[in-house]
Length: 68
Image (cartoon, rainbow, N blue to C red; front, side, top):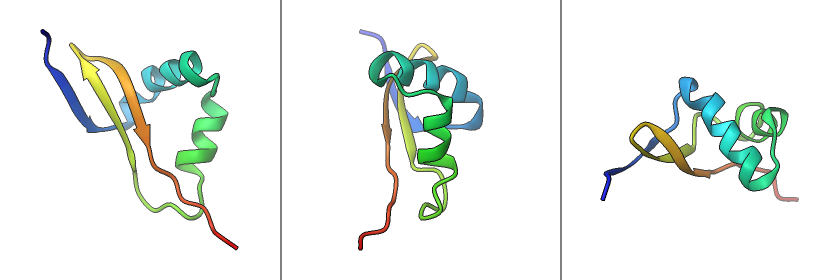
């Protein structure tokens, strides 16, 4: 079995990560940016990924929003 690595996403992962999200959820770069990079309630990077042999195979992102 190959080693699975879980780690925080880095800027250089974005292209491969967005490709995965497009395949899984039909989310494009604009959606990714809105949810994780332009979110006014989120300070910092809360996107994690799973990779095997340098290939991103999974994603978990946390985002914030304001409750009324």
